[in-house]
Length: 399
Ligand code: PMT
Image (cartoon, rainbow, N blue to C red; front, top):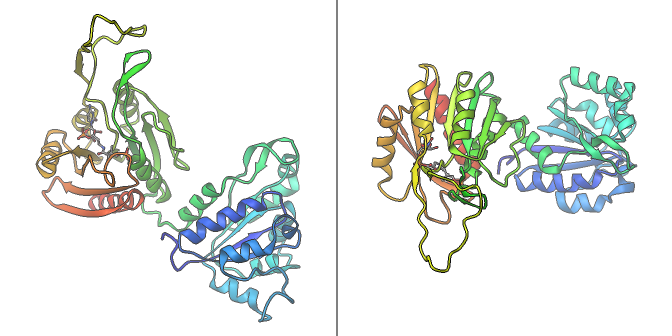
């Protein structure tokens, strides 16, 4: 419940993308926010008030004189708001907001807010690029409001270009970022995630069950906290965390190359990836055929590079190095050995092999060990929460 006890105003103006705000509202509610929706008259031509009222559990404000039991309802809402999101924001509402015009419920309420505001422009490309619209967005940005760039693609008017309202999950992610303390500002964080794959032949490979969820959660959490994050990722089927530079790799060798290329600039290195410890010595260039007279197939393997150990050897004094340990037994003993052997500042050890922790699960149960011998037990929880607690401990140690 990341937004528990937060009051959010969702301003909806009249664009075809108004339907996406319904989904955004659901994300906000699911995260625990109390949401009041304010609609312009033209927004109601696209989506009815009832939809927003049912999903928000609050009456929609759209008319200052008819919609409200109190003549100062808009001031109440503005005063209580912790954040305002205007999505979609049409050229018309952007023009009104940038010039302080107050002629409907949304523009009038927004004149009274003092909390952070995020404006999500959505319109035809030519309108979006129009110098007047850009000038108005500049005014809002200089006033300290957040402007979320629109996506590019095919628009409702069939034009192709910038102007699409980003996906609701993306806007929601940026709302969470708005509420997150920026305690990694100025820090560069290098994260590895996912599995590596090592070819046996062009159609078969050696790999493991890593989904990338734990590493991606850490990269996303670090970005929200103000960090500049580079994510070196093995093949996974996850969306890139917003605002993170992602470098895709396949093999341990490629991962090592990218980690080392980005190592010098990094302040914090977090190695979550499940690297294949062994790779086939002699990967075939064509598919190995099944032979009827030969039931057994032997693939000779050789050890891969230990990337974390290599980084531990190169690590500078002011760099903080975190490893992960995936164990099926002797968690503590193995984790402590790895801290020592790989010159780590901290290791996050998780038992793998159960359905709610380790590989693939949305949750994880992790024990953090530090090089000074101290440790912290984190109970089973969502990987995004584990990520935040892990970062809290890193910041605590760095400071
Ligand atoms: O991706 P998910 O599905 O969310 O699952 C998360 C996870 C279980 C993969 C993650 O929480 C985790 O435990 N990652 C580490 C997996 C692993 O490879 O553990 P290990 O004990 O074998 O390796 C110890 C450390 O050395 C790790 O930081 C690993 O990245 C690193 N290593 C290992 C081998 C190698 N050749 N090079 C390495 O850098």
